[in-house]
Every structure is written in structure tokens, then in C-alpha cells.
Length: 159
Image 1: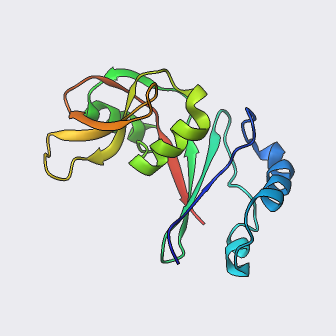
Image 2: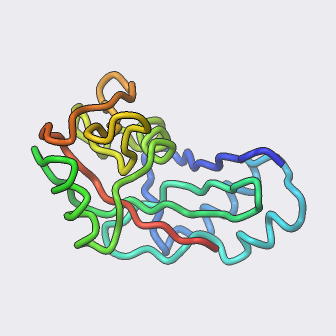
């Protein structure tokens, strides 16, 4: 089974726990049928959200593990990569990875300023660089970790 990227596109609506039925109805109408095991994993609907959180979507890995990504409220401005990583941890979260940032750009761009935001992903070759997502043009690139960019935090749930 290939990696499957599952995202939600429900207009401008932000999913809250009270919109669970709307999500399930949309999901059943719009998602290509999957094996029963897939639906069993999502039987409980979306994870419980706290005030101000936004459900981003889920990624299912080749080994069948589904990780749900939730965008936390608030952002950080003009901080280094290390400062941004520490800030996200202080919220009980993490910076989004590159796949999550691509999902955020496609479906939740309006939640971001048109600037670059740090990811949690260090460059594979140059350890003094980390990846970021530009929320104006949509491209991903890398910057020196001492550059001052914006940051948003996410939390993840494996269900």
C-alpha cells in the first residue's frame, strides 16, 4: 500500500468537535472507498480539538499507522529555528514537518501570514540549515538556523 495523504477541504469552515457529523458526512461523500480496516481506524471521527485548534488532516504510512495533525492556535514571529522548536515544545507540540506544511499551504493558507515559516526538518547534508515553507509563493526551501522566521506549532495523534 502506498502512502496516502488524506486532507480536508470544507470551504472556509474550521473543524471543531461540534462539527463532527458534518465532517463524517463530507468524508463519506468525497473520499474514494477504502478497505474496511481504513474506516475502522477513523470510526471515532476526528480527534477531540481544544479551543482554537484546527484539524489539518491525516497521513497513513505504508505500515498502516495513521497520524492526525492538528494546528495549534497562535504563532511566533522573527525567531531562530532553535527558538521556534523550543516554543513549539513549550506548547506541547512540534513544528510541522514538510508534508504537513504542504497540507497547511494548500488547505489553510489563510491561517498564515505571507511569510516563511520554520519546519521541524533539518537539512540532510548541512546541519546548520533547516527547511521552511513560504506561505506567499508556496515553495519550500532551507535557511540558516540563525535566520529569523515565523513559526506555527502542531500536535500529532496516532490513532
